[in-house]
Image 1 (cartoon, rainbow over the protein chains, first blue to last red):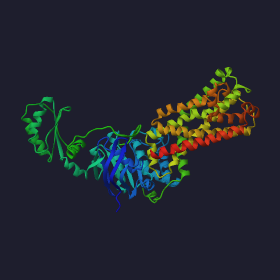
Image 2 (image 1 turned 90 degrees about the horizontal axis):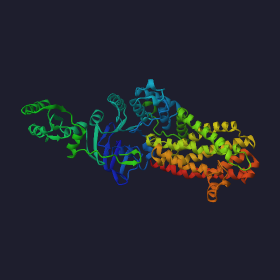
Image 3 (image 1 turned 90 degrees about the vertical axis):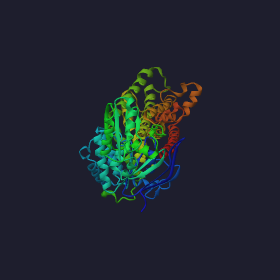
Image 4 (image 1 turned 60 degrees about the vertical axis):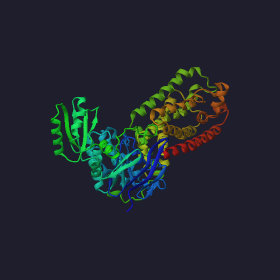
Length: 327
Length: 268
């Protein structure tokens, strides 16, 4: 069976910036693949390459077996793209927006109407369908944009940071919408900076940094590599941090990390509540004021630290051209 | 999604995708009243200023200034109005709208052609209003009505040609404000032309530039058509002379800027 996406040694440079530096990645049919990484890691550049918006400088990139450089037209017939901006026309209604894209996919007027009605229903926008989309809320716009990427019935949906900038409820709604699509057999490639988003949606994840894949696997596998949970202790006085780190070192787990700016000590552990109980016992022996003690899931930067041994660095996204985010 | 999954080889034709894109630009125009009203009011204001403020001081050779001015003003209006296209294109690029379109299986030329057609189509509105105001402030046809209509149609053709210049600027500008700024560089072409004053009143070097740039040919083509044969004599050539040259310039603008713009759009 042909892989949905097959990238090998993909390189893309913008001037002196190397956005993709030999990226290898395979997405199989039936997967939701999340590409996870910090700003500037090359996530957007990769999505734009798959969408045939930019041409890789080196390496091969195939979508359903079609090479993006040799046969971009065939690739375009299989994909639907929802970028970081809601690419909809505010002066048109939700329905008109979808019908426009459906028509551009070559559907007849009748088919375009039918598929738009269906997508509006799917996105929960039926009631607002005939309102100008400039009256929509941010969440509704994103949904309409997602709908526009679906209306051509793509085999592969490309979502670039689909929930960035949305309020929590809209995020959850959008996640539901994306999940229901996958149930209907569409493959999905999405990028995100949020581990929880990848965790909730993806069946597979690839972590990229500096334009290279540094880890791949199921969300569970990747999180395991960072330890299953994190114990986090916040202290009132900065001077107490070293002492707290010292006693927490007795808990089986990673070396406790001190973050001076937030006055927190964290360590990742394999176990759960019983280790937290131990930690509390050690902390009680100290006579210091604690602001907070918590047991939680690792965050992306902690997975990152575990995978790379380096803290996650927040570089500026390289720009493909003026005013246009590209990484 | 079962309804349309059958379309494995779906691909929109050049004609249908151009129409769909043009429709969007057109709807955006008529549903954004600010665009319609502001453009119209500005145009009317300047027409009145030229007619009543500057008009008294300008000698237009053998014809009254209002008859000289109105065809020139209406023709150069395509450049003032075209500036909006540059902004619109830059915005589409900047806000990801073109990304969506470029990811679709449509001919690369369709998006920009649709834009150029729709924008020159929406210019008809301003063109019509200015023509009506022109007649209201004293302009009269000196030639046949048929020639007047032909002149009107020519202006639409010229506006389509200049659209490609503005689309190119919009694609290179990066954002709407920069696009507006860059478009302002075309404004000297409207003044260093025969639109508002006779070219002969300008100093030598400037006169040479003014006489041979496309806007002058376009203005003179329209002016000789609407004013009739007498004025053609005043300008030195028949209307045919100007019409042919204006159309050649238009074709040149479409070919050169159309190629640059489509290439730029393709590369993204």
